[in-house]
Image 1 (cartoon, rainbow, N blue to C red):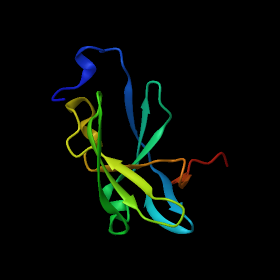
Image 2 (cartoon, rainbow, N blue to C red):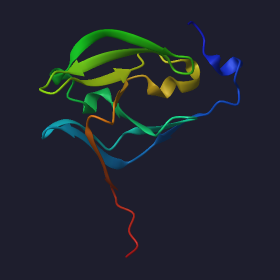
Image 3 (cartoon, rainbow, N blue to C red):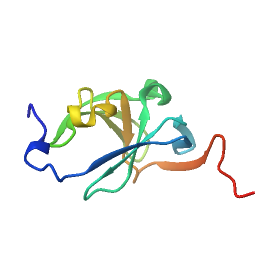
Image 4 (cartoon, rainbow, N blue to C red):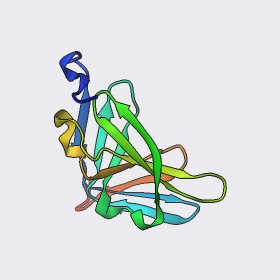
Length: 129
């Protein structure tokens, strides 16, 4: 797939929102990512997904995986895995995302059903005091 499906579905929504909240990902007590520079992707018919700048992910703990998949709205996804007892933890990224979602380049996302993802406060925090 060389071009996105946005031409066929201009009404399809993939909203990308920058956030300052501290977001962490861990599994079994091992911190895998921590950032205050995440992007939240709110894609039509999907749940919210946090994308971390690759520099804020412990990529040294992951090994490349041969799997790929294609999203008609974001492009070719490549995967890495974190081997652990009880199954691997996978992350994915779009190395060359389609122009409509170009901001995702250089970011990594986690499958949230197998990690502990926590969203903290933004710095400076918004306070009601």
